[in-house]
Length: 299
Ligand code: ASN
Image (cartoon, rainbow, N blue to C red; front, side):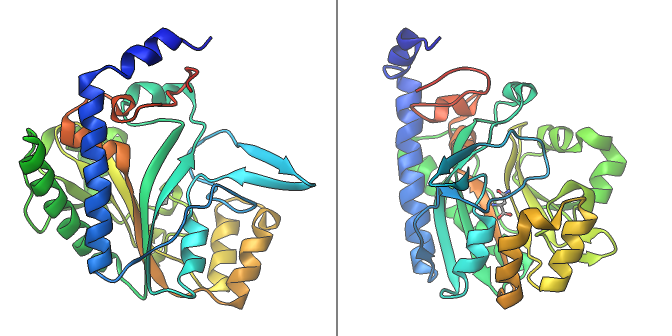
């Protein structure tokens, strides 16, 4: 049952009000920053026959319309690649639906509906994107801290980097949580193995990818993920097969890949997670007015 009283009280919660104000400012500043760097904002895609299959388990959400099956967008990765046919640099405030399993509820970082600032740049390297994100976050954290008197440190460049292998050897599978608790500044985990990521992140050594996660310090966990992309038809086919997928599920995407996709790199930054980090909230559910908390009905 939907708890209307709880939702009503949340709308009067000063902590939530402030977080949404901070988020509004963050979105405005992100747009400004990216416009200055020559990016074009494209509108979000909410339903499509192609969406991110995602490596981790989420339940599929579909709607059927005139005999066509549309998925609700889990991420716009494929549309980002296609948007680089007309444009060199694009971004979207992309609403994503991910019907996450119950066990993710306790992370404080997952909602069934959230928004990511998703950006992609033609002919870019992973390092170009890391450099851009560092500049953008430093500016946004500094300006939000000043405007809202936030208790957050302004990081400096370059953010520390650790490879997946180093992190795994030190902390085993829980490395992201352990490192996040230990660090005092945002940092990158790079070179994820193929088994941990989707087929669209580019492989450069046997089974190692040209990709990266940005992680917040003080236990706030994953902030963003991205990488360089596979864009050549034959390589994409090979990666889909090695990922254990049926080629048929990606028929349409493969048709586009055959016609030609530009090389690119990009990243997606969770907006509610950034808000949570800036405002030091215990959960992303307090970073938005109408959260879809995992396992709990919302409006
Ligand atoms: N937005 C991510 C990226 O650019 C993909 C995702 O959200 N799964 O790599």
